[in-house]
Image (tube, rainbow, N blue to C red; front, side):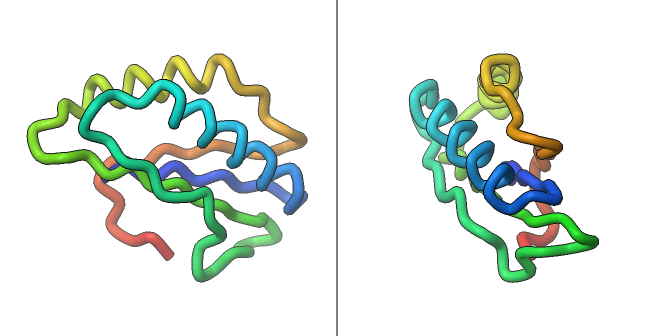
Amino acid sequence: MIAVEFKGPNERAAEQTAEAYTDAIRRSLPPGVSVLGPEAPFISRLKKNYRFQTILKLAPGTEATVVKEMLKAVSKDIKNAGKTRVVVDVDPVSLL
C-alpha cells in the first residue's frame, strides 16, 4: 500500500492538485494497482493545512519499484497549485 498525501494552506488548491495528480496516476497505472481517492482523511485539517489522500493498493507480487518510478514521472508532469506539498508514504502506519 502506498499513501500519497496532498497538503496546503488553501483547501481548493490542495484539492485541485490532488485531483490532477490522481488523474495522472490513473492514466499511467501498471497492472495490479488500484487507486482509491482523492478523499479528505478523517482529520482533514492539521496545523493550518488542508489534507487530501490518494491510496494505491498493490496486488500481491506487484513490484513497488515500478510504482515508485511511475510516481516520480507523474510528479514531474504535475504542477502544484499554490503551496501544496505532495508526500508519498510507502507502507503507511496510519491513514488518519
